[in-house]
Length: 301
Image: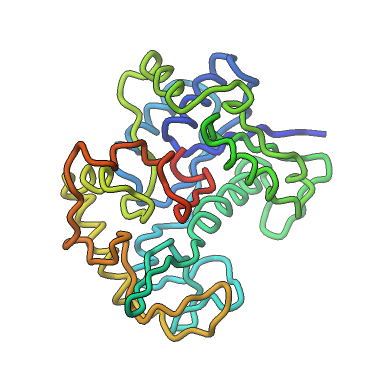
């Protein structure tokens, strides 16, 4: 039986620390890493990824399903289809967890972007580029995959949820995902300390520039970058302008009457006051998400 140990690489703090630890044999080695690229990361994430590739460690594969932002703007159909998840043109859309406003009632839309632009990309990259399968070819019975995920000790509950819900519909997914940081009692702060010794630059936070899970401190940081901010504004406008409304009610759909927003204030992003440094949003973003900001640990680790 051939087992591939593959790091789900978000190119953020935890997954970078895991990659370097695996290179130095400080944890059990990995065979390779896969970076699922939404094509919407900040520029510093892509620079950091190139630095990681230059180290000569386990191979880093980059897979993509195209630009998530472009799909949100233009309604480009994705590769997968789910019942009820279609826009008014009949195409399937990948929903980001945007905030909704219906009258005075606020909510949040169903998130599909992690599955379609992260998990499915990892699946496809593993099958096509690592194992070498062609479309519709079955996975050999003697091949299985073990995902290594960069979730740290302070996020143990997330690790437990992922472990309990891991995909077991294919033989190569039967192995439970592994969380070496949890196993070795390593926190996110420990990872930062480790990276300060082994990385010549500050490891950036990995997430789409327009991710609704950002806190105000992160929004302020992104607003200072004109390129990122222009993209954020374009997406914020697009998710209200693109007609994803009056769809058949189902668990996979939502009826938002066009009132979709990136910020939890349910205001256009250009009208939001993000506050100033020193306010209560200075806690680390990934460990201060709030109950509605559930993250699977695939995007920003």
